[in-house]
Length: 359
Image (spheres, rainbow, N blue to C red):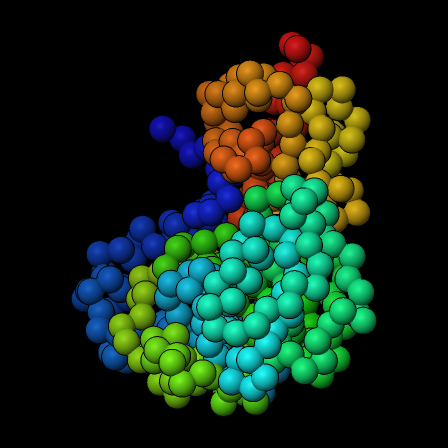
């Protein structure tokens, strides 16, 4: 069977080049005589792989020298708690913006460890936009200010970062990391699950400024301690070895393409193809407000649950899979992360045109 276009929100489509390299090296990596899956994480061969992955993240995101890059486990969900436990050792307070399901999940988790000020929310409007922020509501004594840069489920993104002054900005960047250029120095910490734009599930990237490593709560378990993980080069325990290796292959692919500036232009073009069609369509409607539209997750509906279902089933038969919207929203969602080629988006638009003509 030929490969299809996979619009899954995560785990998501990976670069074919990376998969083919992994296939070739599956049984025997280089001259090691073993698979990467069999290697000791303390071996010279594996440490070279791990360090190369970290170096690529630093290069591709232009991470300043006063930041640590950690490859952890547990996904972004583990970092919901870890962020609070690692940063709330000061006032015990933090600001959160409630802009989507994962943003809400992060603030609910953080409430277990300190006092949370929800500075703005679009929850009552089904998260169709990023809420407007009023700086007068920010807590100047907060230990950090938390945002989720891209809303995977509802298809929105921050177009402008909040100015939080001296309060460190913490960002869950799981679904748009490496898809557009960010100035890392504007953040105190960035974290992201790998399974959208970095590689397969299993690895979580944490980029944290050095001066924030001494703020953890006493209850912080060593597994989630950024300070202890940093001191042990992310190998406090056995890391997700094979996932980190595959992430390295995906990062090498991105570097060959020209890095983040190049892929950002591709992502802008891909999103424009889909949104331009939606704006002109007489059948399909985009659900996110136009000024906050995500480049990674495009959400849309026909207005009929029956037609939505017919569309999704027909798309799958046409080799366009995983277009069903999140169970809490319904409709359709096309996740067009870095590894989705423009040909995949063109194929989706062609099918949408054909479906619209038939209905």
